[in-house]
Image (cartoon, rainbow, N blue to C red; front, side, top):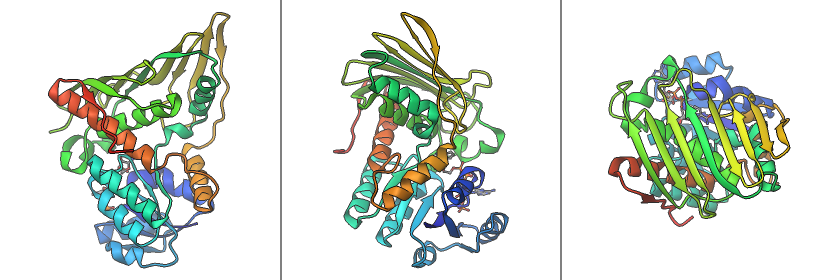
Length: 332
Ligand code: NDP
C-alpha cells in the first residue's frame, strides 16, 4: 500500500507513521497547510515529498490510500476530494462536524467503490477483543448495564484546539465520547436509542466542554453510563459490563497502548482474562490493507464512524438542552 498523509499531525508522528510502515506501507507524501512545517515534518519522518495543495497530493497516481488526521472541521472536504480522486480513505474520528457531512462521506465512498474506514483504535486492543468475545459468547449472560470511565488529564502538548477551538471540533465530547460510543457499540452490537447528559467547562480552555457524563438507553434494555473528561489527573480509565451471570471489570484499557487488566467475576469468584498485546494501530491497518484487497471489512468502517459521531452529537445536544435526545443515525 502506498499512502499519503493528509495532515502533519501529532497522531501521525506518534503512532500512525510507524504503524503504516509496520504494515508494509510506503508513505509517499504529506500535506500541511504550512509549507515550512510540512517540509520539516517530511524530513523528520523520512517522507520524500511535502505539499500544501491537496489537489497536488491527490494527482499522484502512485498513492493508493490517504490517512486524514487534520483537525476535525477539515475531514469532510479532504475526504470527499480524496474519494473523488479514487483513493481509499482512513479518516480520523470524529469523521466530521455534522452528521450530514459524515453520511455524505460514507455514501461518496460507497458510490466510488473505495474503502472508507474510521480510526477508532480501542476496538483493536487485545483487551477489548477479549471482552467482546466474552460478551458475545454469553459468558456474563444478558448484559444489564455498562459503565465507561474515560476521564483523563489532557497532556499539556494537546491543550491547543481541543480545549480552545469549537470551530476546529474541540471539546471532550468530539474527542473522547466518540471513542467510547464506538467501543460500547462494538461490545454490545447495538446502538443507543436515547441519551441524557450533563457537561461542564472547568476553565481549562475556552468555549468548549471539558467534562461530560451521559446515560444511554439501549434497544436490549441495557443502560450505559459514560464519563469523559480532560481534567482528571488520577482517575484512571476503564470499562465494566454487568450481566445476569457475571461482570467484566477492565482497568486501564481506554488507552492507545496495549495494556490494562481484565477480570470476570461470577458465582465461582474472580478470574483473570488473558488477552493479546499487539499494537492497536497496526492491527487496524492490517485489516484496512485486507479490505482494500477485498478480504473483509476494515476494523471500523464509515458507518461505525457515522454512528459514533451520531451518539456524540446526541450527548452534546442532551447536555445543551437538558432534555433526553433520541439518537439520529442519518438513515444508517
Ligand atoms: P494536531 O494538533 O497534532 O494536528 C492537527 C493539525 O494541526 C495538523 O494537521 C497541522 O496542520 C496542525 N499542526 C500540527 N502541529 C502544529 C504546530 N506545531 N503549529 C501549528 N499547527 C500545527 O492534532 P492531533 O494529532 O492531536 O489530532 C488530529 C486528528 O486525529 C483529530 O481529528 C483527532 O481527533 C484525531 N486523533 C485520533 C486519535 C486516535 O487514536 N484515533 C488520537 C489523537 C488524535 P497541517 O496539517 O495543516 O500542518
